[in-house]
Amino acid sequence: MENLTLRFRLGRIPIEVEPLFWLMAFVMGSNLRGPAIVLWVLVVFVSIMVHELGHALATIAFGARAKIKLHSMGGLTYPDRKLTRSQEVLMTLAGPFAGFALAAVAYAIPWQFPAVIMSPNAFTLLSFIVSVNFWWGVMNLLPVPPLDGGHVALALAGPRRQYAVRVLAVIVAGLVVVWSVMAGRMYTAVLFGLLGYQSLQVITRTARA
Image 1: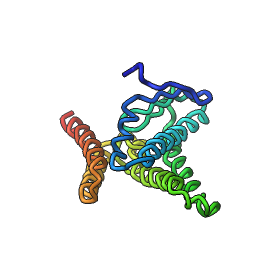
Image 2: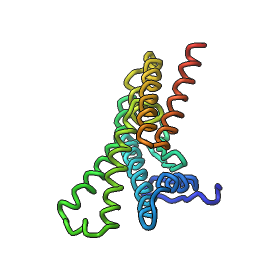
Image 3: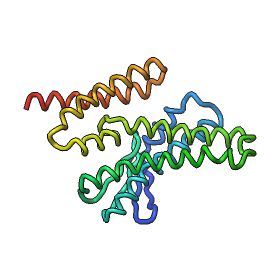
């Protein structure tokens, strides 16, 4: 699997894309057919790259270096040194807001160039970009570690309130699981079920300490 990892650089930022990333993207769009599945995988790749580049460029702006890895659960950006709490918050928020900016551009294109919507594939592509970057960005801002919203909540809460953040994370994750099952979004249900369980494990270990 290591030999199948795609490696390249964007400027000073080294990037790795693991094979399971492509499998994850394909599975998430497995209900699609024909060109739509190809467009979906492309949009997932570009959208997660833009998200992680938001993190990476903010990291660089704070004087650190960053590397990006796309894996089976999404992506991660690694600063080469620890950032201050305020820098950590801003770096974390830069990811989803980079996605929101991409969604806004895709949403505006048909208004500026109405002919675009005459092409089914172009319309599908823009719809995927808006949906992925807006809704995934909103979900990613929920206060559930290790999502970006969870990182921000932990940073803002400080060391003394980590337990409260984890309790909130379990509640929010549970609500998302219920909503996802009712909406038939099983991938989201499984994902937030796992994230909620991770926070529950942290709560259990803290209670035993």
